[in-house]
Length: 74
Image (tube, rainbow, N blue to C red; front, side, top):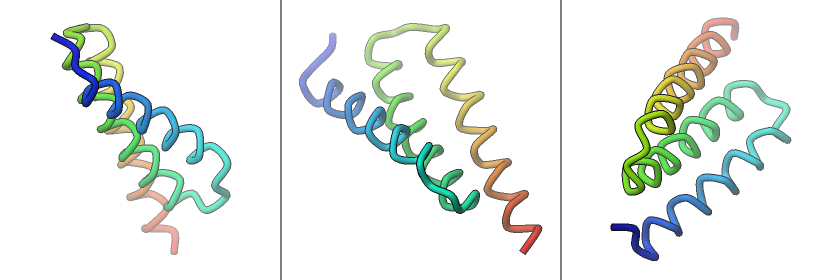
């Protein structure tokens, strides 16, 4: 069952991901993308969409790898 709280998670996730696209610092962009991904993961779990859930997990892992790589370069 989808609730308003789940919709709020989805909207906040979209806003966070959109903002992350405009960030130049790759470490900060990766962190924001991971946070947005987690928020979207909560939403995708609430709607019980296995494809969307899988996509979000892969996206979160990719974002965290970007954070680790950018931290290693500095």
